Amino acid sequence: MKVMVVGGGGREHAIIKKIKESPKVDKIYALPGNGGIAKDAECVDIKATDLEAIVDFAKKNAIEFAVVAPDDPLVMGLVDMLKAEGIPCFGPDKKAAIIEGSKAFSKELMKKYGIPTAKYETFTDMNEALEYLKTCDMPIVVKADGLALGKGVIIAETLEEAEKAVKSMMEDKVFGESGSCVVIEEFLTGPEVSVLSFTDGNTLIPMVSSMDHKRALDGDKGLNTGGMGTVAPNPYYTKEVADRCAEEIFLPTMAAMNKEGRSFSGCLYFGLMITDDGPKVIEYNCRFGDPETQVVLPLLESDLFDIMVHVSEGTLDEADVRFSDDSACCVVMASKGYPVSYEKGYPINIPDYVNNVYVAGAKLDENGKLVTSGGRVLGVTETAKTLQEAVAAAYRSVGEIFFENSFYRRDIGQRALKALEE
Ligand code: AMP
Ligand code: GLY
Image (cartoon, rainbow, N blue to C red; front, side, top):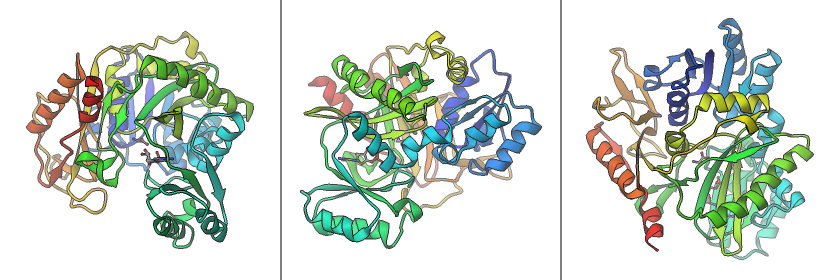
């Protein structure tokens, strides 16, 4: 089959490498892909948000199946447009993608259906938001309603900080229209777990759990980023926690979306916090996480493409979904200065014997040489029998790779390893 994958980061590289293993896939196009993906798929220079151009390309090239990976095109309705042309897709339609596209929507959904999450209030009027803050205990969490590249969440330690956050979103519009509505919510504590799941609206199958490392610097210091590394499985996601999540969160969410007439088909991502009161939802994403995908898919033993087709056809209950018992670790190598500002264009040296590298922010220069082009440059993943071995192997591989101006966290997996010792 001729397949098209929309997106061009490390997550898309991991998806592409996995579906390439399927005997049913003959040809993969990546829109736009990147310099590393170019080794595994034919890259086409069309932006993931240029919906008209994507549909046009799919029609002209007789694409038989589309995987839409990033949040923007999903929330904008690319799946609806492709399906209207008769092209089967993996990914939710616009109506369902709102579960990530609007935090006000997802919070309201959880309240209505009794799905555990932080207590909150929603505001479209800045003065009301500022008045409400005066009644809150600190710290407090201020979130922009819409998509903000994972940066629209501010944890304020003091009333002043909280007021500044509300003003920056609602008055100065630092996140554009995403901030015209804000959610102010209770600050929760506890370890975080990411659970990606396959669902067709009738069946929901959780994938192996994972742990993201969102802050830029060691010891969870520095700014929030898109994610500096991941491990899987997440030791805080015990069998008992998993059972509670399935019963109190996963299945109720699927049912709630069906009841709302917004049946979700694709990868539904649960960002969870394991509090003293039990697991609670921090956020939903309507797609595979990045860099969670880079540790979850290498542990998938069955055929990803086959699963995706089953999801799109509504027959997930018949799919073979199996994960290995091994562990995985992904260390993100970034450009120094990320997530604020950084230089680009440095040549990247990856020895041939380092196989499991997912390329995120790199392009091919005029000589066909891979050079840095983004903040997060590479996701270096290794799998092994134990988490300890996987972490050691990932860092060994990182040590074999070189580009100028690189930086990475040295402590990916340390919190998980500590939890295993406890
Ligand atoms: P989000 O984009 O909603 O995942 O938020 C980004 C990060 O902010 C999360 O991964 C958490 O670490 C943190 N966060 C979000 N909401 C809360 C909350 N209610 N309490 C504590 N931390 C939170
Ligand atoms: N790694 C978090 C996300 O993809 O949103």
